[in-house]
Image (tube, rainbow, N blue to C red):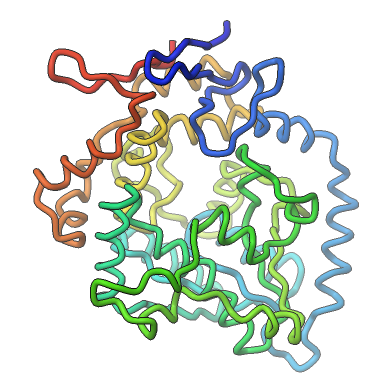
Length: 381
């Protein structure tokens, strides 16, 4: 079965991947002539990659950079979640490295994630937490939620900048981010090298959207933006600081990362058995703002957290397409009532103001108004 439908707004055709259930409304995703998205094609490529050769390449890389003085060998941008924690655990206990875990603080920390971070630290890791000026951070979150429908723009900048700033300041040559989202989940791959190395162009184009130096105004001064600024590229080159994707060297799967980590520490999951908007209970638990973030993805692009999670499992042959469809019908686009009061207080919005902002960002190609209710023009069949 294919899922091609002519959109009545603008004449666009809304298509769903014929292998997973990702729509072509996902930013930068590409479909081939068979109607298969490039994330699924990437999944096929992962099945034939020589992972032993990639691992050997990784061992050679880290052996060249390993500190001879006993200092930190690498920086791990670390939320405390299952992905970054599984990376940190492997670096330390499989490869014998001494990683520094660097956290750019969640906007509204979740107690589950705080427990998970403490469990990992007690395993024997050094940890640096950076918390930006909350007056400025909250102001930027409110601004970007209203303007772009994304309250986490400034947070995205901090996650990209702070680990690199730390690496420069402490002269640590290696930074290991998780996966290259543009190839792993469907997007625009800037170059073959960008699958392995993360650089400033990738950060600006695919992570933030613009240069944080543009964010002054409304009481935000240039000096307030230090946590969001990428280090000077000359300093990175001079000190040979390079950010790599761990997933280039090791087969990537969010489910397998969770399964690996829960065998190492008593990793905490959502106490309710699943997270709002999806069927999983182990992913993106660190920030109470995440429920709104994924809900706004549903508002703007017509797919939510369930489709995101199901597609990742389908692409790794951990779920069938029919199973993903069933879960999407049950949970995708669920209203983020959990933590909403905390979010509204953080953004300084009433519920009516919140609803107005949400509706402002509804994509007319995706949504229609029927009998006073918003409905998807082209829901999953």
